[in-house]
Amino acid sequence: MFRDVIGHNEIKKRLIHNAVNNRISHAQLFWGQQGSGTLALALAYARFIQCRNRQADDACGECPSCLKFNKLEHPDLHFVFPAASNKETKDKDKVSCKLFIAHWRKFLLKTPYFNYLDWLEALGIENKQAIINAEDCNDIIRLLGLKSYESPYKVVIIYMVEKLYYAAAPKLLKIVEEPPDNTLFLMVSENKDRIINTILSRTQQLKVPLPAENELKQSLVEKFGIDETRAGQIAFLSDGDIAQAVKLIDDDEEMADFNAFREWMRLCYKKDTANIIKWVEKTASAGREKQKSFFQFGLKMFRLSVVNNYNATGLIRLDEEQQDFLDGFSPFINHNNALKIVETFNQAILHLERNANPKILFTDLSFNLSRLMHIKAS
Ligand SMILES: [Zn+2]
Image (cartoon, rainbow, N blue to C red; front, top):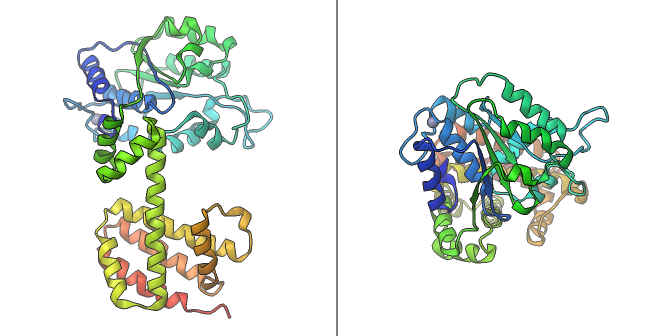
């Protein structure tokens, strides 16, 4: 949604204005350097255009179209992105991005703020040249030849259009020049100078600058609920790169989860009831999403403890402080209690999702863990 887009208030207004006044260009290029958040803007714009119940300044978030956007599974929303064969593809496969669409959706659903290299890493092809090839262009042509399912427009988002392979360009050019009715191409680029000229000249160009430090700071406070001082530090450290800022916030959250988990486990082990109750009060007042992510972190630590016990440390990637904790903690997790602990945790997650009272939930879980942690290996 536009309201989830970090920074860029002026650009959002302009895009909304264009859509509302039916001045939608059929080939719109969002270009800006790495971290400027072009993809997030293109997605919000696509959602706004397709929404059945547009509000003055954003999509509604609730109509059938928006619900499909929530999963990135709208039948009139297509993605094209650079790809290359990876260890999951077979020799006979004709590589095109449709082989990786499930992967792409999952990746993009986490955050639209990532760098190109993050995407290549996610595909496991960081040492290869990924391209948008002729097969991808054939797929676009085929998809656009079909009737649109349920919306006024068919939208094709082309991520990193500069990665279009030169020999495939004529195909894309032809369909951009003579598109079927009600087709929108939203192209995203980090380097406009590398876009094949014939394509570039057919697009309406929208420059997306890195947000100013103060704008980024304000936006981080609003979107992530972090305090002004930390938001200011992150805005400064990331130098306007939104993807970098989002990564720093993720790291902060993981660190906070780690500190809370470490404290919790110590209290549970000591069966320190008074302080467990205090800890529960504090943790149960966090938002539900935070609690869920904390549980996921806890589960990860239990799993890693088992791995650590088998000395399969090559599988573990933690910083030094977390690894130290794990080395001390993992001996308490053994074959007599590991399964039971994981099961208890999973139950708690399930209850949390069903809106159980977090205070009761965390208290019960704490006492269960206290008991389970004292079960000896033999
Ligand atoms: Zn809607």
